[in-house]
Image (tube, rainbow, N blue to C red; front, side, top):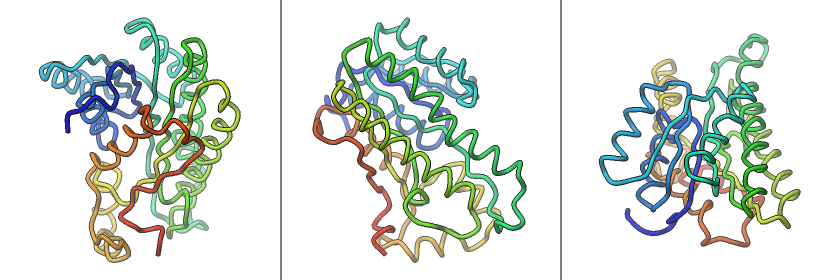
Amino acid sequence: MNSDLLAGKVVLITGASSGIGAAAARVFSQEGATVVLAARRVERLAELTGELRAKGAEAAHVACDVTDADDAARAVRFAESEYGRLDGAFNNAGIGGDRTPMHLMSDDVYDTVMDVNVRGVWNCMRPEIAAMLRHGGGAVVNNSSVAGLVAIPAAAPYIAAKHAVIGLTRAAADEYAQQGIRVNAVAPGTTRSEITEDWFRRNPGLEQKVNSMTPQGRTADPEEVAAAAAWLLSDRCPFLTGAVVPVDGGFVNQ
């Protein structure tokens, strides 16, 4: 995959140290973007930044905990200071939480999942949109999940959080539609990442069960989700905003 889909664009990626975020860094840079990688695990970011630069891409990284509003704002300022503007953002950082029945779920799990997956998107979207308003527009893609569209067992905080991400996406899309900013979401199905691999380890047979419910019968590679996000960030879909794009092998059709 090498094209000009994102040529000339400066794109910030949160949760870029692994999984879909790291895949997005590779895919976006292959599509011509200048990428700014943000996550808590700086060592991994530095390694990935070096990998991308070795391939001729323009890339930089910044430490960022999305649950800290000041950290999120600092990451946006870093992108602007390094490259002069911000054209796109992929708000991908998130956690899975425990797979526990609701009546046994602790408040701490609920609070942590909501803090990362919802407040983290909120914390990032505000400075990102402010930067895009300063520079004439842009595009935001938030990473939700098929769990933001349907229910799955024993994951109530995660489901609530991913539904909330879709709500934030639609609210921002409506609010900034006439100011040159598009806001969309991807809703991945089962995708290979540290979160899903952890779930599979702790729940033997879960991957096979989920795959049996997916028309394509398999788990997605993170690059497949990243490719959808790249298209949503590009100028190829200028009339698309407020959309939630399932990247799920047909799961939500069931």
